[in-house]
Image (tube, rainbow, N blue to C red; front, side, top):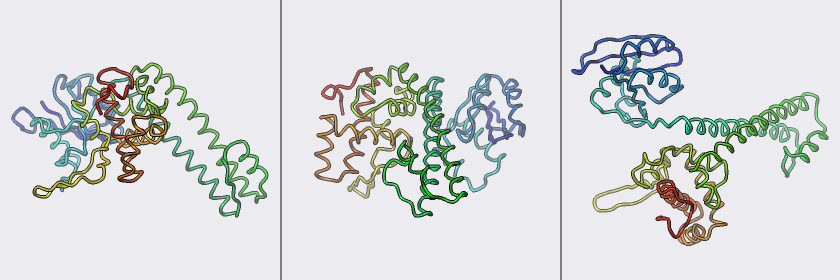
Length: 330
């Protein structure tokens, strides 16, 4: 049997089809009862989309079923369907699973999932802290106060404490500062855990031999790549990072445009951050960047350097080697 499961926050719609594609059952049930369904169909095939909070459901089903985690962005028949209801989506999943037409989403091993959760949670908290800092700056702008140095360091805090403000504005700033302090504490705790994970990861330790790669960016790169052997060649990894150029072809003419920006945005971000540092402290990447910048511009050159770094990373992780530019095929 083939089960198509359209998941939602509290319930799921399930369609069951047989080997001939005939619909055998349609069920709508709460998510906490999916384990019962999985036991009834133990050993059968099932498909769910990798969207929303899919992981608890995936792990529950995977104990009894052969679960395919579907990449929704690559299954356009479902994503672009003109008729979209829970029942229709579940049946489409089941039928496409039976026909072996579903593009799978990568399911990383537990240690990679943990690292990925840590770095993504840190990123989220940093973004929320930045929003709080911007709210403090907004109060200063509204009250015609300016401060050019680091506003949230010791001297900046002294400046804020000495400002002449209304009681309301003082309370607003203190409330935001309190939230920022809480974020600082939580981010520091996460960074300690990330650092320990990096020390335990042979792959991350290899990445740290590349000039420009630090503890956090190494963690992001390892978490986003996962198991490097899921990529057959470096071009696939470059495409996964969205660093591959978009190719426009007309007749015999082929024009390469800007990068696709598809795939893993966190991986692309980490590589560009590392490249910006590496071009200043690594001769191999620095020379490559300088030559390209003379013909193009900084942005094009730094993105190309990030792509070159990723090609090196692919070979380093595949061969289990440290960074050694002359010995790395780039």
